[in-house]
Structure formats: C-alpha cells, structure tokens
Amino acid sequence: MTGCTNPIIEQEPEMYTTSGSIAPYSQSNFNQYIEQTTKWLDETRVFHGAGYDAEMKAVSPYRLMPNHPMGKGCYWCMG
Image 1 (tube, rainbow, N blue to C red):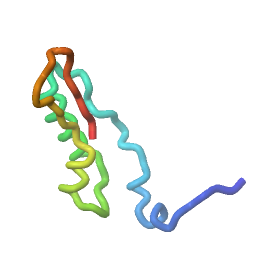
Image 2 (cartoon, rainbow, N blue to C red):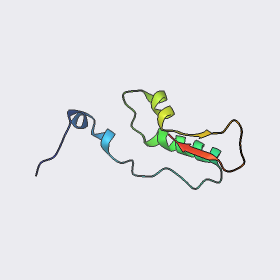
Image 3 (tube, rainbow, N blue to C red):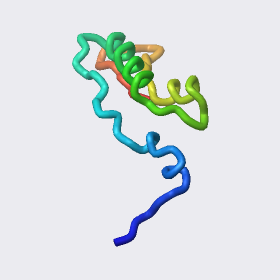
C-alpha cells in the first residue's frame, strides 16, 4: 500500500494532527460564542505561514449586520 506524503508534513507533523477537542458551541449569545471560540482557537491552533494575527482574523468567528435590517433574521458567520 502506498500513500502521499509531503516534506512539510514530515518537518512539522503537529500542523496536521487533530486538536483533541472541538470548539465550544452552546453559548447563550453570539458575543460569548466569539469570545470562547477565539480563545479555543488561540489555545489549540497551530499557526504558520501568514502569522498569528492574519490567521486569527481569517478563522475567527465574526458577525455581519445589514445596513438596513428587514427584521427577518440575523447573520452568524464563522471564518
């Protein structure tokens, strides 16, 4: 049996392992979700290439709000 490999995986195998946990997801409001998920990412994510700030901005949850709400729902986004 053969498989694919990459020198990067051999050099930094911790980048390709699971975190051992999942992000918390039972918060009572979106601000708590943002805070707890960002903390979880900070504690479990392996950062590389783009650097900490750029990667956290790319993968952290955020909220989009319409300029003129129509009262028909809300938007929740996960980076």
